Image (cartoon, rainbow, N blue to C red; front, side, top):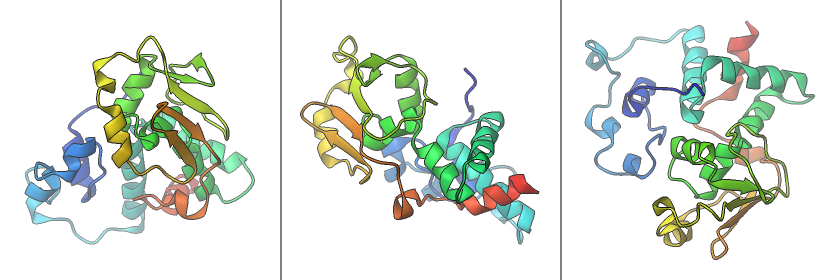
Length: 209
């Protein structure tokens, strides 16, 4: 399966803000944004000039793609699907992205980053409603239950997970049973729950040109 490649820190520097692509590392002094808060490249330290409307739209699209770790063809499909559904296209698009299987695993605190969540899903480490599923893009719906596959529960990656989950802030549209290590999607994210570090309206405008 195709995935994004390259330095994750470079992606954050290009956007000019933390996208938390490396999980806990992004909250430490090792974060590249703290050391070199300017775009990568030979002329990055000079900064950028005033951005055009197109530039703003492109920046928000790139930011969202990098945040969720999607390629252009994958990302555009979410826009196309959002436009087919009746309602606010920008909110619908974010909702579709947020309810991806790998993103829900990350939001529940079962993985430290979306990249790690995608890899863990690919390796069949989680079940949906008791059935193994290794497709990161699967769209979850309310009442879906996510559990660790019994055959993978002893993996080193799950060591100290109970302690990590006790410190994790789970979104209100999700629930995690720390003792059972069982997550559940309670509802679709709405309103304030859809707020992201990018503006989806610019993305809709970009593709609607």
